[in-house]
Amino acid sequence: MFPSLFVLLCVALLLADYPLQTDHQAGHKADHGAAGWRANLTHATTHVIACSFALLVAAVILDERVGVLPGVVAVALIGATHAWIDRRWPVAAWVRIARQQNWAAAGGAAHVDQTAHVLVLAAAALAITALS
Image 1: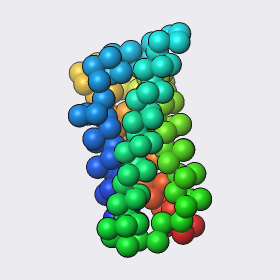
Image 2: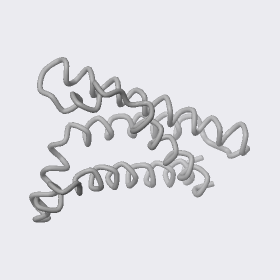
Image 3: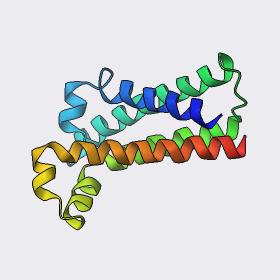
Image 4: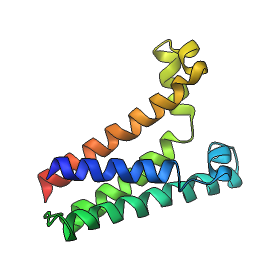
């Protein structure tokens, strides 16, 4: 079950982060104040919906035994961690600690961001598999 859940959650991530993310969300999700949080949480909600749909596909089409409680908890954590990572300061902190400022300035920060999201998805797929 882990491989199919992981792939489906990764597809949901890509959909929510690229074609389903508006320019406004991308440009303002790390801003200070209510407008930044609104853009951030709207974007994170897109992830929750996309990941929920991915788990529904796993359960209905692939006949995977996805437990409701593990699925709900995993999707909630995916949404929360996505919002946290996308505030950008966690990625900036990692880049600073790892001494990767030049690489990050040349586009590497986006790779750190996506790697963090994929690690969360792997943990979620593993937890759902173990608990379902």
